[in-house]
Structures are given as structure tokens and as C-alpha cells.
Amino acid sequence: MSAWVLPDQFADVLPSEARHIEELRRALLDTARSHGYELVMPPLVEHLDSLLTGTGEALDLQTFKLVDQSSGRSLGLRADTTPQVARIDAHLLNRSGVTRLCYCGPAVRTRIDRPHATREPLQLGAEIYGHAGLEADLEIIELAIATLRAAGIDRIVIDLGDVRVVDALLAGVSIPSDRVTRLHTALAAKDVATLRQEGQSLPTRVNEGLQALTRLYGSASVLDEAVKILPSSQGLQQSLADLRWVAQHLVDVDVSFDLADLRGYAYYTGLRFSLFGAVGEGGTPVELVRGGRYDEVGAVFGRRRPAAGFSLDLKELVAMLPPPPLQTAIRAPWGSDSGLRAAIAALREQGETVVCVLPGHEHEVDEFECDRVLVQRDGQWVLQSLAV
Image (cartoon, rainbow, N blue to C red; front, side):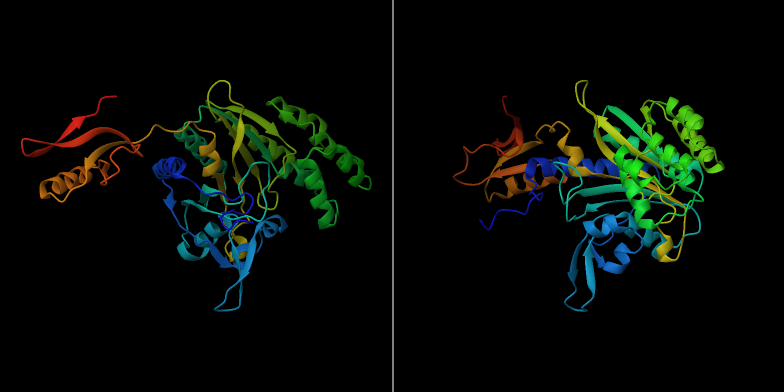
């Protein structure tokens, strides 16, 4: 195999796409800042016990492990940034009130979770800590929507669910943890056959309720149907009421519900959501954002705080957007003339991009969209427009 061939699902990012990613990164972090979110930059590598404690088996399997040559301790490359941000909130900031944090950085994963994904996503996200009310859930959803709109996504669909619906169904029923995991997996996949098999020894109302969840997806009528066919309990009523409240406060987006979607169950403790986006009228909506409430995420660090957040892969987002136009620039000759050098420096200080043409390369294609050229006229260096 050639030395320059990269591992599967890893790729270099070339200039045009890299510029697009960087410009979008700045715009989206500015959007988070405008909502009061402070930027943090956790390290890519952490001690494995800190990185994975309390995150569940799924993240463990996604994490690359290595050994620290200086200490001999096991380290991990982060596959998800949320546990690190929870650690920062719990131990480094340790604020008593509401804390709003955002981040953007690479993650590395041992495997992909869907076709055509990358194992090195550029993860951008936001977290709000310290408020248990639905106002925080709504705020984080609205920020996620604003983030997609800032990126140029003009058609957005939000899919809402709540892990407490399943918790309410299973309340009071003694089930081994491995079996609960199989039930969650079957629900997320809407695998009725497995649910029927796993539910044979469960109370009839629970078994039938789990199978019914696989059909409870679609418009707001799903919530009304859930009230009719699922065993009534205070927990179920509360989760359905919360879903209804959040949906009623969302404007200018299409809202749907999926009461069986339990992806990321190890994280979430309440409402969860996915945002689907499309560009233009003919585009098919693609899942771009996942998020929700995860009040237990800081407990392993000794500080259980209400928390909600979301994340997205900036590379994936850029891939579905049209490429931006080339950046305009000024072409200048190379030379040692002090007046020329001073003119170039002054233009760059003004924020202009100036590309110097090195000797012998005068006829090469410009890497930028050079629409002006620096020329000498009457002993002065001045800008001249280039004919299109």
C-alpha cells in the first residue's frame, strides 16, 4: 500500500473546502456568542477513565485508546466533546448559576455510525448548565436552529422525542440491564419482531406499549394517540406535556415526533431532538444536529447539574452547502522596490488579500479571484481593475 493512502473514512481537507469550513466555523461560533455562549477548547487527548466514565458502552467502542509513554496510564482520543465540557463546568468553572458554553474541534472515532460519514468529524456544539426547566431545552433548540440558518440551511425539520416515555413504560418492572439495552436498540430500529420476543415475559401492558411506540411517529397527533394507547402514568403525562410545550413554542420550522427514537439513550435523561436540513426546494432533508437534555452527564465528576445541548459535524454541514465564490484578491508583481513593498503592506493592513507573482510564474492561474492588479503609474503604485 502506498505511504500516502489514508485510513478508511479519513480525508485531507483541501484549500477551497478548508476555507469554507473555517468561514462557517467563525460564523457559527459568532452565532453562539450572540446568544451568550462562551467558547472552551478541551484537549483532544485525556486520561481514559476521565474521558469515558459514565458515558456508556457505545462511546467506549467509538474511542481510540493509547498508552501515555511518560506515565504509563491509558489515554483516549475524544470521540465526543460533551463529557469534556461537563468536566470543565463541574471542576474548572464550578459556577453556581447558569453556564453557557460552546466549542468546536476535531473528534476521532473508531467506526462510522452511518454511510459516507467521516471518522474525524469537526464537532461544533453548545451546552447550557444549571437550569432544569423547559426554558433551557427551548433555548438550546432555538440556538441549534439559528446555527443552521446562519449556515444557509433554509428548510429545517425538527424531530422531537423523550426518553422518559420508555422509562415510564418500564417503571416498576425488574429487567436486567443487558435486556434493557436490547429493548432500546430494537425501539430505535423499530424492530417489532425483536420487541415482541424480548417482551414475552413482560407484563402485557408493557409489551404492547413497547410495540405501540414503533408506530408513534409523525405529526402532533402522535401525542394524542400516545395518551390513548399507552399505559397512563404521571411520568408519561409529564413527558408528553413537555414535548407539546416545546413544540408549541417553535416557530418557522416543521415539527415531528418519534417516541421510539432512543439513539444516545446512555446520555439523555429527558427531551431529545434531531434537526434535519435541506438547501433549496428540491433537496432531501438530511439529519445534521442531535441534542437534548442530559442531566446526569456531570454526575461522574461529582457535580450533577441540569444540562442540555447539541452538536453537529461541521464537515458534514459544509458538504451539503454550495461552495462559496472565490475570495477576491489583488495581484502584485514581486520586487524589492520599497514603494511596492510599502503599498503591499498597506493593502494587507486594510484587510486586502495581495498575491505576489513570483518571477517566472506570471502566466499561472490565480489561486484567488484576482480582480485588481497593483501597477506603477507616474512613480506611484496604484490599483487597476482587471477586465473580466
